[in-house]
Image (cartoon, rainbow, N blue to C red):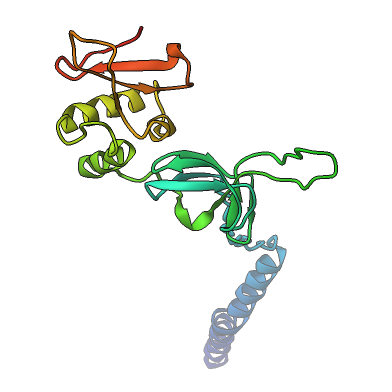
Length: 223
């Protein structure tokens, strides 16, 4: 009986030892190996490629349209201040620049006036031009218009009427500043006895280009 009990106890001890071995040693190893195998079987994760967006600044097109800044600007046949002045442009006039050279801008095609002669064009100094149309105040406008007609007959006497009428004729395109400079402003007419009239030529020197102004009524008329 005593031998039987010892055998049973021995078997129980062996069982407990085997259970402890399984729980504390064999099973953790099996779990670890299974985890490694599962990890190795996973498909590799490709990291997302970080794309840096390059800010590509679009090249701005070159500025070709400019505005005249001074009240009066001479247009020359060569990019030189000593060159002949072919015409005149005025403050606020819009100019299209075809070529830039040494601080000058070309505003016309090239011309050759005689066989073998030099090429000429119309040039203005870039320093006298603005990229944005200038803001012209009422006072500046009056001063500018006044410069065109300051040599008019009886200018001081009819100053307001001359200024107002001249400004209107310029704004609606009937006249250009050169027209008033050609006649040095408004000229007193001796043709009409019944009204006090002054005239200027706009667009030519023919009778059809002659514009009359009645300074009493402010009306313009033609003959």
